Length: 210
DNA sequence: AGGATGATCGTCT
DNA sequence: GACGATCATCCTA
Image 1 (cartoon, rainbow, N blue to C red):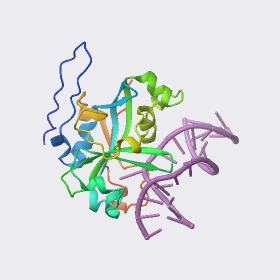
Image 2: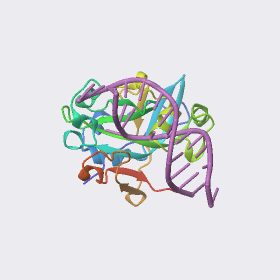
Image 3: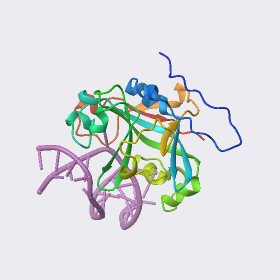
């Protein structure tokens, strides 16, 4: 079992060119992708500025058979994008307040997704703090609603967005975390799901450092 | 540090 | 008309 080949450009002093993960990255097993996304760079172009965060927490949602996955309740206008090809954003509003960022994965007609749950700031931190009304440090983006607010990701702007183009919103290779630094556990906020799905260890997070 | 509670609206029955 | 892949605030210690 081998990790997807994540290659990164050598660091350069000039403005970085987008190096988005290609569609093949997203056309694989959901849980492998959720694992591999840890350490990757989430990039958003916001008000002419590039905001970048290191992904530190994800959850896999496994499609039809997963009663915690939206698509398991049927194909609707909201869930439609998950039934399409991989490499697109599925952004929806929860609790009337929070935008959730998911990446559609797996083959077409196999409606799986990975929820991005947390990031750490790499570029544009000052703007992220401003978006978060002064919150900083671990409180800046350690939750799915927090990171979308910090990065300016909304459903209106990015639902159904192609993340393989390298414009607007995409994911780039970053550092690869060692397995020893990765923890798994049950997913958050899905108590309504069947026990076998509610308790499945499909949440991935980087162990707290420093 | 941690538990309870209210916020707020798109989506589906 | 109900409820949710949550968060911030307001308490109590």
